[in-house]
Length: 94
Image (tube, rainbow, N blue to C red; front, side, top):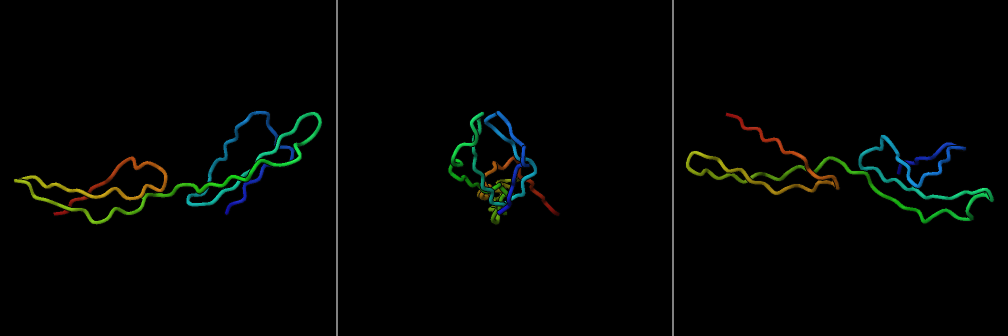
């Protein structure tokens, strides 16, 4: 697990925060606490955790079929690791 901490005195009044440069395939945990002129809330929110995504898994061997003068290539989409696959690359050698 990677520990991401804000700096002491690093406060904001918005209800969102963006953490940059996360590590792929890493577990992160966070919780939130509120403050007003009377002080901090007595408790933090529940702790939330998530894994960042990684590269997709390797596709399994493709199936091929010769159809007249055309070659049909099919494969099952690999697990995307929670980030949609945007492209495939096919390499054909002589």
